[in-house]
Image (tube, rainbow, N blue to C red):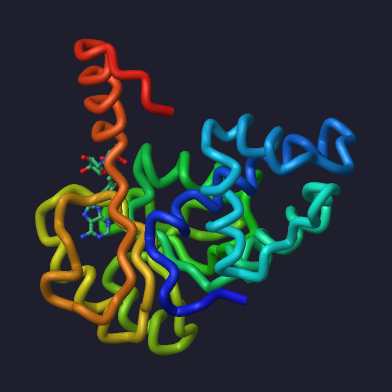
Length: 213
Ligand code: NAI
C-alpha cells in the first residue's frame, strides 16, 4: 500500500501506467517484460521498477509483470473504484464535459451534487442529477458531506465558494479556476488543472525542438 514519502512525481506517473495497462488488458496481453513495459512508457526500466517498489514491487525476475495483477494493484493505489462523494460547481460548458467524462471513464468519484448560481439552469437534469442553486451548497454539504469538489466557475467570487466547501470538510479540489485554495486553506488537497499549460508546453517544445517524452 501507499507510503507517505512517495513523491508527487512518482504519483503523477501512476495514471500513465494504469492507462497503458488498461490498453494492454484490452488487447488481451497477459504478461509483459519490464523492459517492454517501460519502453512503451518512454521511461527506463529502473525508473519504473523504482516507482513500483514504493508500493511493493509487483514484478518477478525473469517474468516481468502480470498485466491484470498490476492493473488491479495500481488501480487500488489510485482509488479507481472508491467512488468518493463529489460535488461539481459550475454547470457550464466545462462542467458538463467533465460530468460526461466522469460518467463514462471513472469510478474514482461519485458525483452527488451539481450547483450553479444561474437560476435559469437550476432544476435542469444533467446525467440523472438535478442542477441545484449555488445558494444551497452550504446546507447540502452539511447534510451529505462530500469529500471532493470539482470547481469550474469563472475566477470572480471563487474564494467564497471554496470557503464554503473547505469549511464543510471537503478535502480534495479538482480546481479549474485560477484561484489557489491552498493559499487560504492549507490543509486541503488541490489539483490545479489548466489545459492551456500543456498547450503552451507543446508550443515551447515545437520551437525548441525538444523531444522529451
Ligand atoms: P461557462 O460560462 O459555460 O460556465 C460557467 C458556469 O459557472 C455558469 O453556468 C455560471 O452560471 C456558473 N457560475 C459562475 N459563478 C458561480 C458560482 N459562484 N457558483 C456556482 N456557479 C457559478 O464557462 P465554462 O466554459 O464552463 O468555463 C468555466 C470557467 O472555467 C471559466 O472561467 C474558464 O476560464 C475556466 N476554464 C478553465 C479551464 C482550465 O483548463 N483550467 C478550461 C476551460 C475553462
